[in-house]
Amino acid sequence: MKIGEKIKRVRLHRHMKQRELGELVGFTDGAANRIAQYESCFRVPKEDMVKKIAAALNVAECALLEPDTGNLGGIMETLFWLDEDMPDVLRFSLSSPIDKNQIAANAATAPVIQTNAKTSPFGAQPAMLWSENDLLNYLFKSFATMQDAYYTGKISRDKYFEWKLQWSYDSALPISASPKEAEKLLGYNK
Image (cartoon, rainbow, N blue to C red; front, side, top):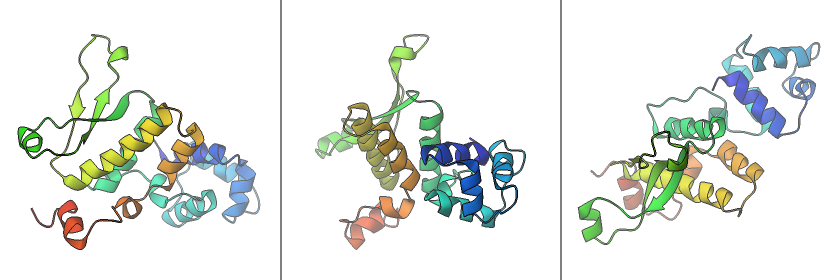
């Protein structure tokens, strides 16, 4: 999803008019027009303007930028916007681990992403994705928890979208992890 489309979606979520957003970021004349140009992707905001727009919309800057899939935060942002763009295409769930070593160690449930088999044109079994990276699995599990809360009616659509907008890599790290556990999650002790 392009940055302009993200700006528009978040602005509408905030019940904000283009003119209001334009004024908040410092445009005086033609505020609505400039925001409309960004949203239609006629213009692309420069880095300093992206920061102002993110602050005005009260979202993490990374929520608006094109994700860098070379890092874990970028992978999560990509999944968030994919989930927004095409709901029900990717569903997170918590299931038993499929690795025999984990089963033998009596490990906790492992997060997986699975497709919605109900909509499969071939009636195929859902595909699953897991990672050898403990931190990415932890991030998947946090997404699975929030997605489950939304789909089971525990949180509203707005709260679910807001969680994705406010999500940041730093805030997603487990607070209760000891320094040694954090190093393991970050992959320093492999």
